[in-house]
Image (tube, rainbow, N blue to C red):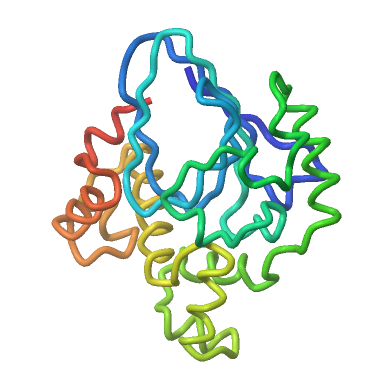
Amino acid sequence: MYREQAPVPALAGRLVCVWTRVATSARVGLVVPDGCVDLVWGPRGPQVAGPDTGPAPVRLAPGDRYTGIRFRPGAVGGVLGVPVEALRDQRVPLADLGTLPELAAEPLSLETAQEALAVRLRAAPGPDPAAPAIARELRAGRGVGQVAWDLGLSERQLHRRCVRAFGYGPKVLQRVVRFQRALRLARSGLPPAEVALASGYADQSHLSNEVRRLAGVPLGQLVSRP
């Protein structure tokens, strides 16, 4: 069982949600790229889940409980004390970072964790102010060159800022946000051919290939997962 809820108002600009997951059976869960960074408390202890570029399977046992805090894409800033790109495709024990000792404690309620995180966010360097616009324009289907031009940047400057903010360059970010848009549309019941067209893929075959590269499974199997 997986459940999301809105973050406290003070963190709404930096967080997508807070979430809980309780495994009811033995299975392998699948985490797919979404551009986000999560703080996760689970059976393996408090961890940071960095921005993914491919599927990350998670072996679940009955009764396993996870809680998490999900940052918006590009919204981590300097609160973790390490560059976001150093966390790409990684699961790092929170204690190893040394910057959030109060969040490495267990057990910790989501309410308490958000209060502690809010204090840390006020003291840490903030995110790149251009990050929301970069993600928004790429999500809307604009090309990397167009986004750079709109922001008054060279493509090289845009790449550097994307890596610092999101953990990878704009072309990877574009693939991830396009994939997430396709997944939302597919889960709404739209046929795959229409999903491909609405999400900016060349055709249904392009969509299928990208989903397999990013998620490791076909779109239909991904949509059927809880």
